[in-house]
Length: 437
Ligand code: NAD
Image (tube, rainbow, N blue to C red):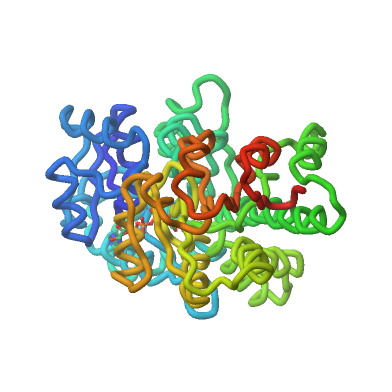
């Protein structure tokens, strides 16, 4: 099938590469000329495991190409995916300006019947707004469907190629049939396509992310309670997760959720709910708990130093900046909040991340009190403490002897509970985790 994908970010690029890998002819279009130039030169603008190989292979097979010419991409395509960003507006609601601009551009380019699919995460009612934006530009027949994307950054190719479910919001049998044919190769072992109306599909995406965010905030709140009661959240979560009605995933406490999806989708769903006259009280609390959780490591650090000679002037090594392992995505990363607060308290920071240094450096800029380190142990040299923010694999079993010899004081703040408190204390470290003694 001939396809176009409008927007070549995390979702658009994975979508384009994944469909091409199933044998379709895909053109990925973006208004960002630098991004398209990089892709044409064989460079992948984001860090996503396996994406470089699948892109290179399908480009070499001439099934995948990149352009800034949206009309050329759309013309002749049977299905056009809109996968542009939907960042939060000032009131938290999703900013649909990119989606509607893309829709208008698609409308201007249509020549034959086309199925236009919203893959971006968009509020209920957007399919209709996209339909109107296209209809304002063309008399050519088309159908708008909603097909939210559930991939996880860091494992996006796997999620796209072997999806748990494919949600298709579409009432038109002709368009449903086109999308069924497109997605069938992805669900050969069991039928995982779920058809519904567009409003339900749009809400399914937000409700899913809101549920995952709720689990995280719930466990972060329980972790704080554990600290007051002398319980160990690591044992509590294992005990809870063994119940098949609960399950073990997304029960791990930490420094709060971040990234390009949960924070903005939680806020957008709250805005949708407010507009609909039904405040989502639970979600308001989920958001509040998360904002508070991003402060927990610095609270602990300041708490520690009040007992010693004060925090001002301390140098703090930070391991992990990306909002989670496996990506260089820094959008709403808790590390940013932590760094700003440490700097505001008069401390300096020595930063390391295996892949996100460059992105973080662009975001934070060159600042007094910030140093950047390609090697994790270099960040520790002469620092007063080591803070782990993102649990990259390579941080899970580090050489603690080496860390101790580099730090000025043997002090660890483990924002993801990946280190064994007994082991590191036996080595002479002072250890702070989240919700554990
Ligand atoms: P992104 O910011 O990485 O990419 C968006 C791309 O769209 C950019 O390259 C931008 O230049 C391009 N663009 C903007 N306006 C355009 C236009 N008018 N025409 C052509 N291109 C245009 O965003 P993303 O992370 O890929 O997210 C895209 C959507 O998918 C969002 O709605 C997001 O919520 C949703 N989503 C993201 C993820 C994720 O993990 N990143 C997962 C599921 C769903």
